[in-house]
Image (cartoon, helix red, strand yellow):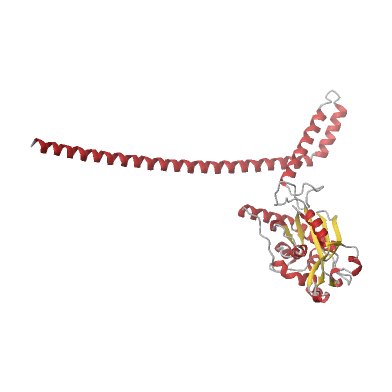
Length: 350
């Protein structure tokens, strides 16, 4: 009987011990789950706090920039009166000779800080003056980004002149100054000079530089630049090069120019028509052919008409997508319409 009671007590003790172990495990599990939940909530709070802090920092930086711009505008507006006042104070108040020097020092420091901020934020710091539109380029890089306009003229090689090869290349800077303008000797024998459209004649290629040398020179100029042109991917194809899509401004497919000219949004107009409609400029006339310098300048001036809207739109897209824009090769299908339209067709289209 004593043995039975001992066995029963042991069984009861074991059951209680098992229940205690189970309860301990469950308590530890609940504590772990609560700790994980608390840790997750803490991490979420920290992430929200970081986002708010970054937002506040960006907002404060924007406010500081706006204050600096307003201060500079006010300084420029009152510069003439301040100069007059300073000169009068210098003449009348001889006992305070350091006052005008302090004001001049403050003004110089303000101008210097504004110029430094422009060079950091703008893509045009290497130019003598900011762009006409006042917009900065969305192409941010470690080196200052400049803007160039490109236009190429091609001749025909192969049977019937069906293959297009580079024969002349012109590059202008933002102010329209010629950076590069050379005739290029194609790799294959020329079978069609296309003089009526290209303006290239046989004697132009007698002392022309080889294509390989011209390509190296052109690539060195275009590297890191925002390139403007009309149906420009045809020029890139002739140069056998690929340029980053977010650093290309093709006036052929610019919807801002189509809207400004009163054309349908999807229309890809020729450079001749756009220049006539928007610049009141006649280009590509006569039988002497196109001039690549003239065409590049026309594309550059067309870009400047809508530069502000265009650059702002690209900035918004880069900010939303957080990735470079991919190039659009739609303009490659309009080479024949742009470069080889007969005069009667272009006259009817105007």
